[in-house]
Amino acid sequence: MKDSQDKIIEVKNLKMYFPITAGVLRKKVGDIKAIDDISFDIIRHETLGLVGESGCGKTTVGRCILRLYKPTSGKILFEGADISNLPESRLKQLRSKMSVIFQDPYGSLNPRQTARTIVANPIIYHHSLKKDEINERVRDLFRLVGLNPSMMDRVPHEFSGGQRQRLAIARALACNVSLIVCDEPISALDVSIQAQIINLLEDLQEKLGLTYLFIAHDLSVVQHISNRIAVMYLGRIIEIANSIELYANPLHPYTQALLSAVPVPNPRIEKNRHRIVLKGEVPSPANPPSGCHFHPRCWMAMPACKEERPELREIISGHFVACLRI
Image (cartoon, rainbow, N blue to C red; front, side, top):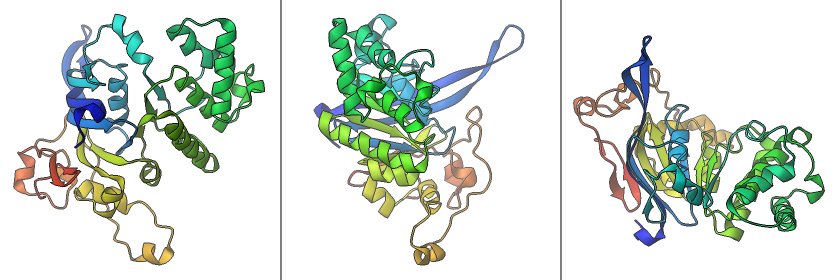
């Protein structure tokens, strides 16, 4: 692991439970355990990929880091400072240093505002600049993300899907941020546009020294853009490793199953690959299984898996796995 001064984010024993209520009085009857005691770090200037099935808690992790949600318990350290319990009055300063790119480039943009206003809003909120300075900054951001400044007075529906996502990226960069949470930023785009957005994100990271938390379900994209990858299952992180190492040597049974579903472009190799088909459905986060959450679907499960929760352990240098079999 890197020294603490190299970590831009440190997550320690993070939990995020959403209450389940019932009855006229909305009495609490349980919790949805969206994040169930996870710990990980994000190193400055790297891209950490976060993957897993829908509903495993990936987006909730990103929103907790951004403090859009206040965690139930645990700590989130941003540049060494604990932000997990910051009051609203102190979040303004924090949010000038981190931003988010949402999945839907149309739903995340105000359809009644011009592109100029959309990108300028964060600058106006966080900085005291003159109108001419703001306009010049917006023009620079448009050029930076590959948009023509002549498009600044258009509204979102006048842009294509790829252009709208570039507009969303420009807004995310408006305040010279150091961390960007990319919440499935290409999944709503055409395949032909996805590569352009990925290349743009990589270029911006190199130019501006950005750090990304890249949330996605497309494993081939995550492999391409990420330095390290964390795999989530039902609110827990079950494996973290370098991108090359994870794809070459997946240790957790769930990771092996995920990677076996990724098609290989070589038909000869694809024909002879072993496809791991998981049985059953993902359990509900309102009533997760005891012990290892994955044991009801795991072909390697043993009796201890039903009782004992596996801790994330370093098996190989930089390769952490939560599995009793390993």
